[in-house]
Length: 83
Image 1: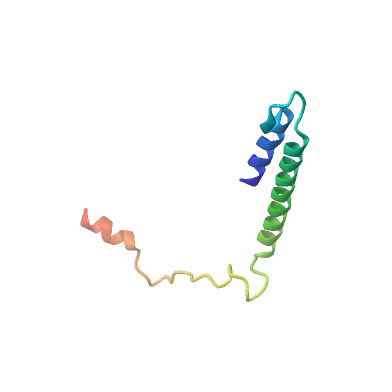
Image 2: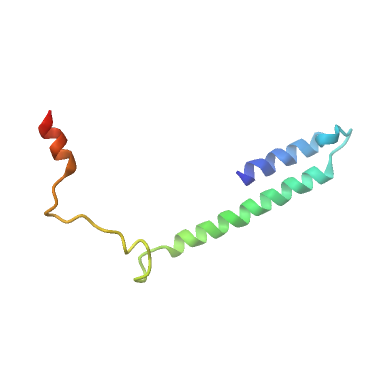
């Protein structure tokens, strides 16, 4: 949501900003660039964390997921039988 707010603030600032200036409102453009920068850093960190979340070590949450056993019944079988 930060990235879209940043883009809107940049466009709004270039068209005059909240003060209806005849030229660009550089404070609003700066705020938009700052929000867009925060969004860029945030997404870069999230992508790096997603790459680290592979099943490389035993502490990874991906490795700790419970897998269904072959002897467990399918819950949808009961629904199909009821029809």
